[in-house]
Structure formats: C-alpha cells, structure tokens
Length: 252
Image 1 (cartoon, helix red, strand yellow):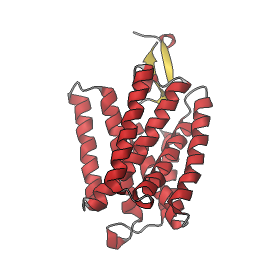
Image 2 (spheres, helix red, strand yellow):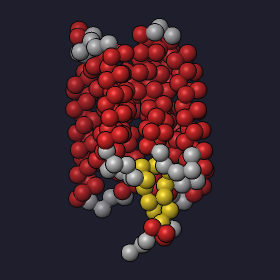
Image 3 (cartoon, rainbow, N blue to C red):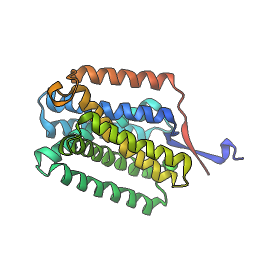
C-alpha cells in the first residue's frame, strides 16, 4: 500500500458523487448567469463573453498560482468556465451565424485537439495527474472547450431537434446514466469515461438552466435569471461548505 509520502496531491478534487452534483449545479448556473448578463442586462453575447473571459482568466490564474487544492477557488473557476462557455457558444452559434451544427462541430474539433496536445505533451489526460502549471493549463483549456461545446449541444438538442428542454435533459441524463453503468460494470478507460461524463453534464446543465428561465410558452418555467442564478450559487456554496473535499491523488 502506498503511503501519503509516496503520493502526489493533484490540484483538482477527487471525483466523487458530490463532485458530479456540484458540476451539474455549476453548469446550470453557467447557463442562467451567462444569459442574465448577455440577455437580461442586454449587453449582448460579445460583451458578455469579454466580461466572463476576463473572469475566467483571473480565476485560472488564481487556481494555477495556488500551492494546493482549494475547493472554493476550484469551483469558482469551474463556474467561470461555464459562464464564458455559455456566452461564447451563443456568440458563435447566433451572432456569427454558423448555427448549432457548425458551432458544435468546431468546438468538438477544438476539444479533441486540446486533449490530443495534452496527451502528446504529458503522456496522460487523467485528472489525478493535474499537479503542475503545464498540466493545469491543458486541463482548464480542455474544460473551457468542453463547457462551450456542451452549451451548443444542449441548445441544438432542445431547439433544432425539437425535444424541448425537459426532453433534452432526459436525453443527456440518460446518457450520463449509461456512462455511470459503464464505470461500474465495464473495463472501459476511467479517464475516457470521466471526460465523456464531464462533457455531457454541460448540455444537461444548459437545458436545465433554460428550463428554469425560458418563457412558459417555450417550455420553461419563466423564473428570473437573477433569482435562479442566486439560488444555484447558494446551493453550490452550501455543498462546498457542508461536503468533504479531497484533492485527487496519484502514485508518485
């Protein structure tokens, strides 16, 4: 058995059930928060993206400079990736006019390129290996692309495919259940399953966020984006305080 001295602490959390609950809350908050700035405040997708890009870069800088894993810093950075992902995807899909298929294809290519470059450079894309600035740079770049891709996939499924917000949420929830089953009952790479689940939680959160704040006539609950965002943020804060959080560990 490896002792603590034979292990290296990662700068990211151990992947547990609580991790996935917080991730879904963060992605839902990213949708309502991003829409609140770009749509409710009427700032537009480009200005919203610029605001959240600054926040994203600032939080990543704090995260990388930290000497160890801090739950508050980590989850604040995750929220920053979800908000910039929301406005960036909306800007690409709607303002640039490339549509959901074009946006999703472009973002999938960027995500795969990021994972390929990460693996080619460091030999692994496992999250428990994220303990150096270089690994963190790849990690957060990959996450930002995955959050943006997830927004495009969620909107594409709910709108273009005609499934609506609840239907799209059920589709992505079902896919996540299949990934969980594969984790328990197959020998498929846990790293591959992690990134698959990580990507799928984003469109799930996007559709849940849209369900909360879109008009009733469009299949939503018509809640205030500000109220929904504050409730989600409060729920995340409670869980970060109440639940145990440990850094992921890897053998040295």
